[in-house]
Image 1 (cartoon, rainbow, N blue to C red):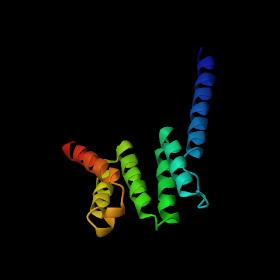
Image 2: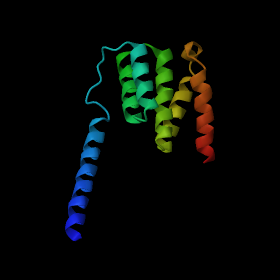
Image 3: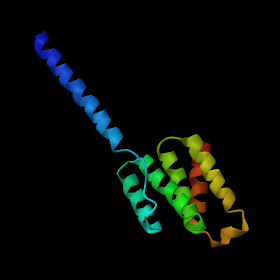
Image 4: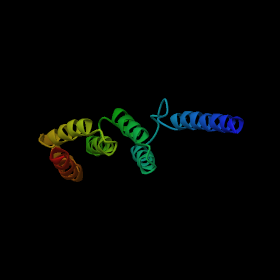
Amino acid sequence: MKRKTIPLLSAVLTAAVLLTLLGSCAGTPDEISGDLSAVEFFQEAQDASSSGRYDLAIAYYEKFLETYPEDEARGVEAEYEIAFLHYKKGETAEAKVLFETLLEKYRSEAAAAYPQWPRVLAAKVLDSIEEE
């Protein structure tokens, strides 16, 4: 009976290693193209987030911020999404810092041009983090 168990165990371990390797390949790409439009960056990030690939979504938002630094209104949206993705990953300390940094931007004169939903949602999530 041991002879049948060992090959089965070996096959299971091999499959587990292969799945781990394949899973790591499906993570964040080495480089995200900077040739995407702002809308495409957000769409790719949302698609990645919807499928649970939070690190890839963060990478798309970060590349958007790098590619379109002048788009401050969408920049605060991307910053909110990055903070929220860290929160979803259970990285509450990182999320808290990012939400606080985002909320600080809303205290500037430029904030009049920013969409208000990131400020409102960031404050709500930050409150829930502080209650934990």
